[in-house]
Amino acid sequence: QVQLVESGGGLVLPGGSLRLSCAASGSIFNIDHMAWYRQAPGKQREYVAAISPAGTTNYADPVKGRFAISTDNAKNTVWLQRNSLKPEDTAVYYCKILVSDPQNIPYDYWGQGTQVTVSS
Image (tube, rainbow, N blue to C red; front, side, top):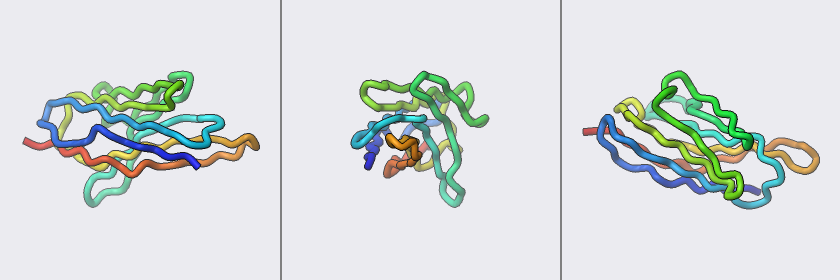
């Protein structure tokens, strides 16, 4: 089992910045990648960004140039730095980790989510 603990959500003004963090713990054998998703009210959960242990990153088009994902492999922690926030960035942000066990069977785990509200 893997546990994910997210933090850093809150209320921020439009144009402001906020950094989310997600720490993974438990039986982690091999990490494929860690990622962030978000779910706005009344909408489906959507992909935001992902990062591999080697540092390869990928971003969804709506956040390119504004969000930055980073990781500390030693701490199994991933961050999401979000700049130039817009009201449409308001959502519950979820952390996800994809790991594999010694038999190379993949599993994914989700955090509990952290609310981010962008409003004046």
